[in-house]
Image (tube, rainbow, N blue to C red):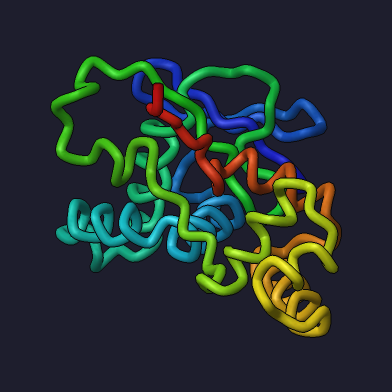
Length: 188
């Protein structure tokens, strides 16, 4: 199960595996449900907390409870089949889902279009932002008044935490997760 495309038809969430197999997500899809729960809890903690509260009455049946959380997260974030995997390894590729409750749903920005929790420290984020903007590690060290050793440690630790190995992967990760939103300059 290296990648999965989720999509919704009527009230059902479908899963399409990289080998082309397609099926409806059910409580019996234990591997997918557990992997999804781990990703939601780790990278979207506000969504996880909101969904735990939403489905609290089902908590006694733990497999069904987890399924409900994953199904709702999928419905809110992976609506159509677009052949771009929605789950790759331990990451989600959140999509914009057209919803009739857009603008009035209490879960918008929480469950729907959730904020990504990258788990990168502020110091690491400052270094990574400059790396993202094509500065060399030496330039980053000079700009932030850090040693090259500290810059390398920040980059290595952040990469480990988010599960990537190199700068091109980090650039894709930053773009996919909108880690550095574009600056707006309103000066005239």
